[in-house]
Image (cartoon, rainbow, N blue to C red; front, side, top):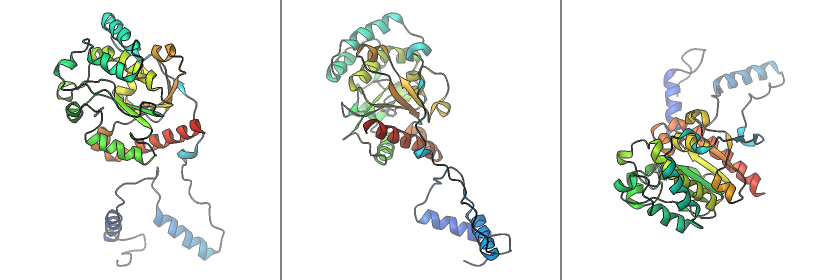
Length: 294
Ligand code: URA
């Protein structure tokens, strides 16, 4: 590298070369919350050394990972936001609540005719992972790959999710369970309707009660809004702790479950810069899980 072109900082070609070097060694995204101006710090240190004055304290680096856990906010009733068909909801509830285990719940969902998506889907996509998982993740609906394989999150977004989870010690083989708001693929991956969600919700509520995880993670806006009974978008809802409960949990005598909402991995594939926010959420999940299992 050549020296500075003037005395106000490095030349543009030096900055580009430095950036290229970072990319070459694999640093392809910023990981701190705030940019740190290393040039300004170096200049500041040199000045301080010359003047032989004690060094100023290092700039403040936020430490969200070790912050005390915030209190849980109660969720609204999950169905409060949805326009429901009472007859379908009642039949779904009685079919779901009579299922004593996951195999029975899967059978009873397969026999349920209250959601027309069943007629266009190839397979029922029920769930995957450990039946007694500590963490249960809930996405939106199966896509093409999931519909074909009958398993949630097996496509590109699922692969990204698995990698991200592995960094916080979570995996389908060990300690998580994963399912969706809807067990059937909406044609062409269209947005699920409120009626479809409401028809399937009693099965999901029973699904959660049967797994009875320590922590719930809602992936994306549809999951978070449905299960928290909220209208705000995911960028407002994410990163905070809530309490999820339902009649199915109450019937089973299970206390409200701490729940975190985060960004959907399919969104992260389109907006990689948002991975930092999702990463923060997963670290918070890890931290809370550690406090619950101590
Ligand atoms: N997106 C989801 O929300 N769920 C899946 O299973 C796959 C993609």
